[in-house]
Image (cartoon, rainbow, N blue to C red; front, side):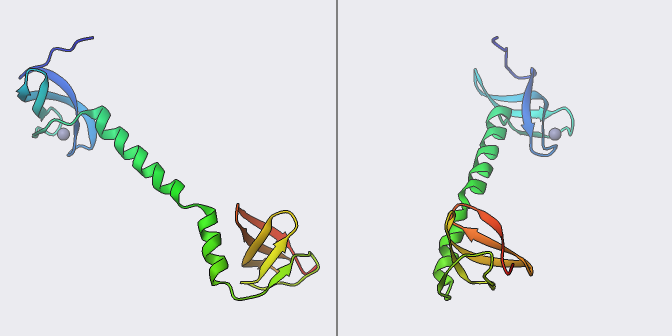
Amino acid sequence: MIKEIGVGKETLSYCSKCKLTLSHIIAAMKDLDTIAKVFCKTCKATHTYKDPNKASKKKVVSHRRKTEMRSNSKDWEEAMKQASSELQTYSPKGKFVKGDIIEHPKFGQGIIEKLLDKNKIEVLFKDNRKVLVHNI
Ligand SMILES: [Zn+2]
């Protein structure tokens, strides 16, 4: 569908004042098919035309990237570097304290981050966090 555009015609634009994609009246054109300025029918302000599709897509992508960057293995590497205790073999019968490094037969090396209660510890392994039992 080819939309007719020109001064005085209606178009959808993102309005930075209303923070919404709204119906606008074209106030000025850059050239025959590029909108320069629009008039917001809602807040009555004239501003630069913002393509509603381009404006929203960009933001979502960059936000999602940042969250994925914080990986568990980075936390694990840092924690292992800072730990000063000796490596112990994990056993449910063992008694561990915060900061201890353990070797688990299945999950590998991990560092004890939290003592949840007297029989439960939260351990940070390279791939994920696990709650293990101890002091049984
Ligand atoms: Zn507006």
